[in-house]
Length: 225
Image 1 (cartoon, helix red, strand yellow):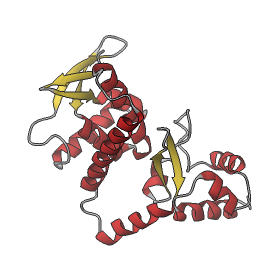
Image 2 (cartoon, one colour):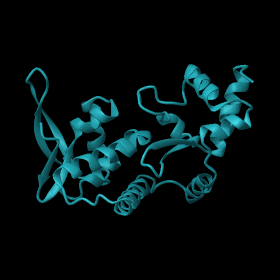
Image 3 (cartoon, one colour):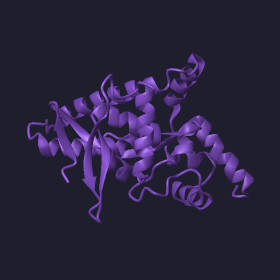
Image 4 (cartoon, one colour):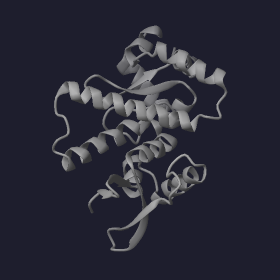
């Protein structure tokens, strides 16, 4: 099935592909899109566009078709640690359908900056009801992000050993992500870490100061240190 469709001169992505990328049930993703539409966060004044898709048994189902902005908002709502994956997928699809997409490193940086601005705007809409003090605290925390090596040094062990132990204990890294590492949804929501994109374009989990302290607390309570 052609996953990228131009509708009214605007490219869209189906909720079926989004659910596959996130490893979630399509019905759950559609319900989430319905809630965001009802709250006015996505879709504007028009109903969400729909199209049909067939499963492996040939049965037909309906899916929503979302533009880039709305698909990013939907992913940020359901699985913020995998937002980089949906951005990467959009870039793949747009590159295939638009040969004129800039190929230089400088042009890629400009595109990454634009996507980051769109994502920040999406997050801002989802957090409109948050107290200003809470937003200010989260901005301050972003200034002190630590990688796994730095956190491991603080507790006197190697990053490999620390990550292996965190995998055993669970609750920090998302086990559904096979290539690389990504934080669990709850870990990010609790303010313990953020997913960032490196200069080479790879997703990287970074711990906040609060998250590094939480790792120390977990290891202390579990008798690891």
